[in-house]
Length: 218
Image (tube, rainbow, N blue to C red; front, side, top):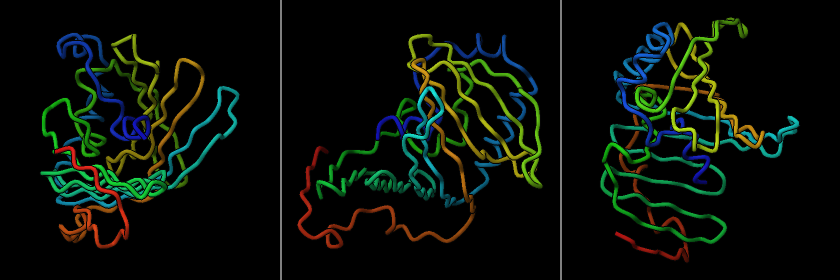
C-alpha cells in the first residue's frame, strides 16, 4: 500500500534544491506542469476513478486493481487494494478489510507529508529533472508526455512518465520504472471536479464496520 500511495502522489520525497532543478529543466515541460497545478487548485472538490497496475520487467501484468479517490480541501478518501483511507483534515483512518482493523493517526499537514492532493500539484519542482517527450493523439485527445528523472539517485526508481491531457490540463496517467525493471502505473479513468461531497465521507464510521478492531495511535 505504501508503494501505491507513493505512486499516487507521484513519488514525492526529499531531493535536491529547487534552484538546481530550475537551472536544468525544460521550460516547455515546466509550463505544462505549472498549468496542471494551477488548474487543479481552482477545483473545490474532485472525484476520480483509476486503475493501478504492476508489470514485470518482461512486460507481464502481475496485478491490476481499480480504485477511487475523493478530495475536498485537505480532506480525502482513497479506496484501493483492500484498504480504505479516510482523512477529515484532523485525523487519518486506515482501514484494512482483510484484518477488519482500522488504525487512527493524526493528520500531518507538513510539507513533507504524503497526501493525494499532491498528485495534482507542485510535486515536481524540487525532486525531479523533467523534459517534454512530445505529443500524441489518443482517440480524440491530445496527450503530452513528460519524462521525469529523480535527482536523488538513491531512489528505487529511475524514471517517471507523466501523461497530461493537453486541453483539460489534467493528468491522465503516471508510470514509474523501477531499477529492477518492474513498472507501476496509475491510469485515471474518470476525473470529475466540483461535485457535491458530504464531509461525512471523509470520516470513518465505526458503525458501518461491525467487529472492527480500532488501533488509536493519535
